[in-house]
Length: 560
Image (cartoon, rainbow, N blue to C red):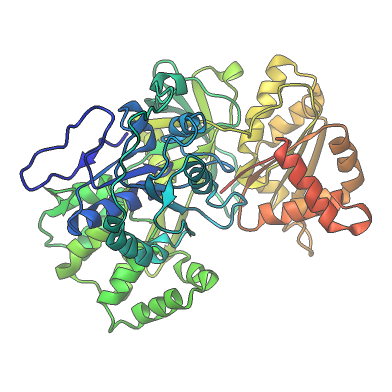
């Protein structure tokens, strides 16, 4: 939870009118699941200070916790989490806002900046919902809602500048004397965040064979103390950057002095290891460094892609590059190190689907993880999360973890049939589902579609799946190994080959679950499902039927 920050006026005093009233010129409330919206909100806070505004920043839930629900001007910055839901640190506020009294915010000047990923169906839905609700309660927008894709570093810049310039023109809100926020007891809405727990890796075994091009590992983590989760949940791991990566940075900046981070001088080694995202270069970083290194051919190429708005081309350019690759290719030298530090985002948590059942495994949590390791431009590259887990398995060191609760991606409450589609490591949550069904001897019929490259080396959990077939836990198993024949064969092809039977399952109430790659697999699988649901090839009817299933909670995805 981020502690509320309030910028001081010239006397150094803080406004203290009463417990419910903010004295700030601008209140920034944010909802963030992975840290991106939080990062953006804090950037806006700093720009507001620079613009001479008395500003404050906190999460939406903290505003409810603090009973600080009267603001002069309000800016909401939020992402969307898990199929259209609010981030965890804003969900309680949203529950309260939906029950707030009619016209309670009549005349409140506000604006919403929301970020998301257009690859997901519920793009920016949390921001849309908050915007609509504040308007229903009488608030007055002082800027049109901005919806940003993953390139929010670029697309939000102009909007933020114009918003901060025009916000003071909106008179500060003065609610009616009879203002009451309604029932604003934080405990009524469950504002307590999921606890961060310690865990150790107790077992690790490789699932792929020696001939596989991948290295997939099954991990078992023992969590200290009470740890409750459900099948379908995910686990966030708080990693440190790999020592090899930190060493590569220190080789490039060998004589670096301490650097400034969050207002403190720290050693470069500490900052690189524990605080900054070094694997995933974001577009704001590319823009800042490319603009600073205009003589670099690589920087000019990247800037041209950014200015063209060609997301696919930019993604192709970024593929395989980490931040140090960009720094080297652009020719960033020691004199610009602080610029790089200032532009990097905080080190991101890594999220993994849980592959176990609490009924069977207690406080042991299982994960299915595909290790990342490759060579590029004369450097070895490894994944941050996967390397961290491998090191923890070897050393026995503690991990910090946090449960991420699933909203819809859960087993049905009744005995409805279950269709699970999870190629590669996307099978992870379904391993948990099937363990749970086996443990309680649930009557649900089950059908699993699994695929990968080669049957011999890439059939994850083969022995377990065969056992489930033998004991009746798994009723149907369809496999698609794409490289075992001349024509590539994927899970979506297998779905189409069993279309009539799948339709019969769906018509008897089956729930459909999809887990894995969002960029290709999830879209191809959805297209196949639409074909199956389309009477006489009328895809518009199939699309509508699938949307109906989604609205009823019978078609859910965990894609990444």
